[in-house]
Structure formats: C-alpha cells, structure tokens
Length: 385
Image (cartoon, rainbow, N blue to C red; front, side, top):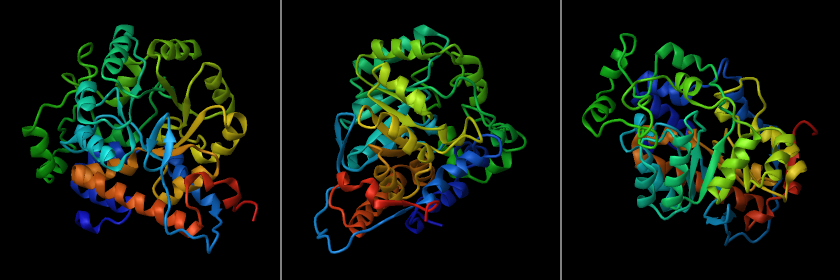
C-alpha cells in the first residue's frame, strides 16, 4: 500500500500499521480498558443525518471561520498530541508546516518532541500549547513563560489526566518514551528498518519542553501511564485552572470538559473556549462521546464561550455535523497522526487535502455556501426518525 492509495483516514491507519513497529502503532491506535469510548467517539456521528437543500447556487462557497480570534480556512483544529517524533522522524515539524499550508490551527503538547521556540520559528499560523500541570510548579511556570515569549496564540489546559487511563495495549507492548526495544518487540522493530534507522540515526529523541526540569521521558524511559501517575498534579482543581488562566493572560482553553456543569464553570473562570473531549477514549472508558454531549453543553453555554468538539473525527461530514449541532469547530488527533506515521509531512498534507475536499463537497451537496449556514435545521436525529 502506498500513500497514493490512501483516500480516507482509515486508509492512513492501515498504512501506518504496516510501517510502524507494533508498540508504536498501538500507542497511537489504542485507548483505555475495552476501548468502548474510543469506538463510540466516531460511531456517535452516525446517530444524526444531514438534511440537504438543492438548487442553492453553490458555485462559490466559503469554508473559513474564526476560531479563538484567528481566521481558519476550515472549521477544523489539529489537536495537540504527544511524542510525535516517535511516529515519524519529522514529528511536530511536519504537522506545523502542513497546518500553516492549509491555514489551520494546530497544537503541540507539553510532551512534544520539538521545543516551543522551534515551533514558533517555523510558522506564523495560529497555534496553541497544551499544558499538563506538573507537581513541579517551577516547570509549569517555565512552560507558560516560554509560550508567552514565543507568542503562542492560545494555551489549552488539559483537565482530564489527573491519573492515567489503563491503556492495555501499551501494557502488553511495553511502549515507553523514548521507545525502547524489548524481547517481545524486537522482531517488529527489525522488520520496520525504515522507521528503526530513522529513530536510531537521526536527532536524539527528547522532550525539550520538559527536560530542563525532569529527565523522565527524555533521558529516562518511562511509560506514559507512569509519567502521568508520578509527575502530574493530582490536586489540580478549579482554583488551579483560574490561576493558570490569570498567569497566562491570553486566550485560554480548557481541554477535556465533558459535562454541562463543568462547561458553566469554565465560563465562570473566564475561559475563552472549551474542548469537549475524552482524550480520544484513552482515559475513562465507558464515558460519553464528545459529539453525544455536544447538544447538552451547547444548551448550557452556547453563545457564551467557544465550543470545540474534539475526538472521533474521521470525515469532513463529521465536522459539518458538529457545526450543525452548535460547535465552533471540530478537532482531532488521530485524523492526522495516522497520516504522519504513514508518510510524514506528505502524509499529513494528503490527509488534510482529503478532509478539505470532503468539507467542501459536503457543503455543496447540502446547499450551503458558508459555515454559518450549518445550523440545527439541517440535522435530524436517527433516534427520533
């Protein structure tokens, strides 16, 4: 299978699976416990149908919108995800360049394998930094100050990782950051020589936004679960979030909000946006899908705060359904990570081109010429039909 054979996100998943050692692929692809919530995140979009209008004169359409004060060419955000250098040697560099080319928001993680400063120098496009609150308060302050100096456009505080979910695929494979070869996985690494040589011979794997304060994850191999469970601040509460918002002073997002009550609290502390997210099903298995929670949250705080539906997005029509339900935009991680793992920047650009085409085609077939015409009138629930 080649890159030119990829015509949807699932095709990129298949190519990534062929090219990655299985512990690395399972880290991207896996989720918590029985992985019910991960599957539900995408399946939830099937519960509603789009209702098209015809003869609407759609020769010219405008897919752009404003997200967090900056124009985006599509109602789509590339969510921040960790350790991208493990998936392809180009890592976050590839995603940043592709996002700028397509005029999209993207984010980098606290556990990024490119530094805040390096990413800022790469692109003038809109970018957010995803903050994990560590027990080391000096590290938290250091990352925030670096983002301020680098003029990041938004800070996204992740609020659903007080402890790690039980990611059973990673427990079986022994995946760590940095990746390490184990007796159980050595054959998989040996039979993926392209990935293995890139990992061994190119620049050293590190987490440059953290390694000024901690060795875990860069010089000392740990599992993501071990990192979360030992390094992150389990005492984080709403006062912590409000304090970080004040310390940051710029556009502030809470990532991981899933209840209407928490959405209301986000408004009360002055957040600019919430990302309805269950961390790709990697934390609390058996929880609701973001798209399923979207109507309830829109009913509570719609019009008061920007609402981003994060997770499960595999098609342009998924983004259209999210907007019809009241979201400002849709976002996701795996939708570009599979493509990154499959073919680096070329893969990410092909994936974004496919999603762009799907959004444009979907709008034309629905008879809409701008995203503000994507309203609840154009959606019907299958449960009610």
